[in-house]
Length: 104
Image: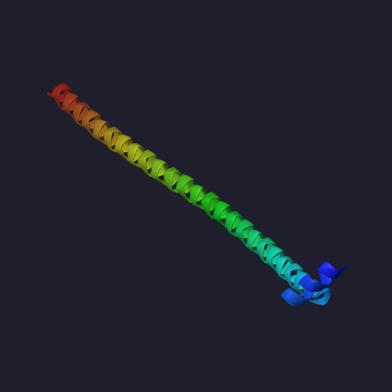
């Protein structure tokens, strides 16, 4: 007990001071824990938002790809229709030529 009292006097340290410092550290660590949990929650929210954004971008890219494919198919259809019209016109010309040759 004498040693404790001497140390106590030398360091100017009391149980009340120790308790107060401990409580302050405890409160600070609780606040730090709460802050860390809040930041983790925010990070999770940001991660979720990024995943949603990525999904949205992937959807847009698929949509864009489908639009481009549809446009290529329309162009192919138009080209085929043009070829068919040209062949039809050529057949009509041949029929006309045959009729005129038969009429002579």
